[in-house]
Amino acid sequence: MERVQVLSIIVSLVILFSVVELVRSRKLKENYSVLWICASVVILFFATFRHLIDQLGLLVGVYYTPSAFFLLAILFLILIMVQFSVTISKLSDRNKDLSQEVAILTRRLEELEGKDGQASEQVTNPVV
Image (cartoon, rainbow, N blue to C red; front, top):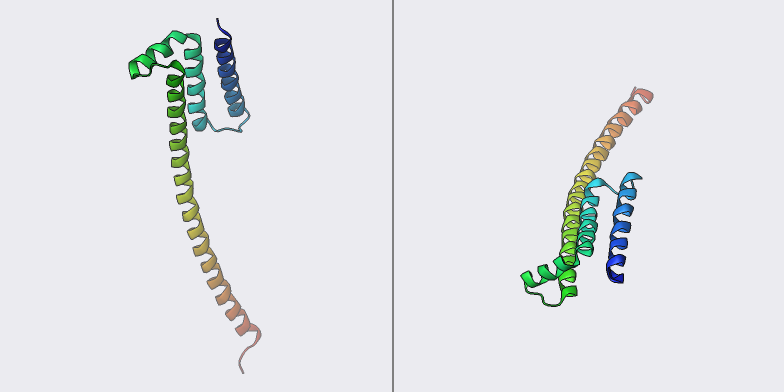
C-alpha cells in the first residue's frame, strides 16, 4: 500500500468519525451530516480500491487519475452548495414570515393598549 493511499484512508476515517461525533454531540444536525458521511465513505472506498478511480476516470474520459478525483470533489461541493442554498431559502422565507407575524402582533398590541389607555383615562377623568 502506498503512502498516499494510507493517508487517504486515515483522512476519510477522521472525517467520518468527526462527523459522527459532531452529530452525537448535537453540534451538527443529521440531515447535514448525510453528505459528509457519504463523502468520507466514497473517499474511503476509492482509497481502498485505488484501481477503481482509474477505471472511473477512463469511463468518464479523464486520463489523468487525480483529475477524476477532483471531479468527484467538485461534484460533492456542488451538492453541498445546493443543500445549503435550499436551507438558506427556507430560512429566508421563515424569517420573512416571522417578521410579518411580529409586525402584525405588535400592531394589534398597540391598538389594544391604545383602547385600554383611552378607557382608563375616561374612568379616571370623568367629564362632568
